[in-house]
Length: 252
Image (cartoon, rainbow, N blue to C red; front, side, top):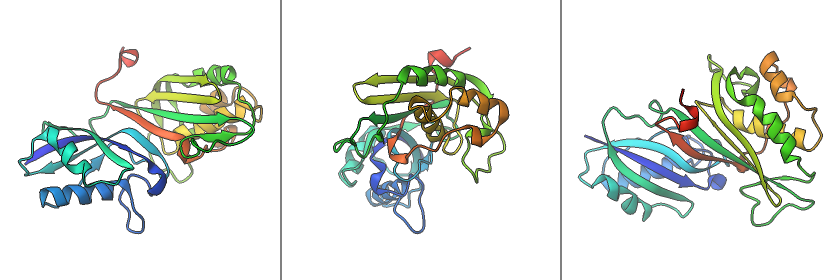
């Protein structure tokens, strides 16, 4: 039995998220069915992140076990011929049997994209959340600085989240602008359910003047979800990379 690691890119628009579901089509199911057909085995894929419906990925990480003799680096070429055009395997490789796509992770990088203009875009409608109000990206960056460090992010978890430990470490939170595109990049040891979308929505509300500055810092101190803004739409979010070694800026 061999363990194969995959890096997956997908447009999440037409899927009910990453995780296989009984009543809707998910990215995991599509990949498992293609790999099962390729290897003539029942393949179970284990993903690093359970992205929600509409969320995209450039660097989703997953693994599966197989008795197939196909070289590890060739799986990407073979399975891509069997996948729909909105899912692509960017890399495949054989890894040691103790590697686990989820439990071996050291951190993740997410990107959130806004488009601030009077009219929504046509070409970016599936990847950017629209803001009809101009966003003050400098103010948003000043607010995002409060996220850096190790904090209890209990206020940043969506209702219904049952995780016991809400302490996470973030080492990057950058807001940049390119024309009408406003980009948020966050990196950290882990993220609570909807945490990045809550951060993005709060920053948008602050940047547009709907929410008073200092909301992120207050929410960290109080643990109160009501101190934060609305949850930003799923389609603006992309999982960029899963880290199995800490980046330089995160090392002690």
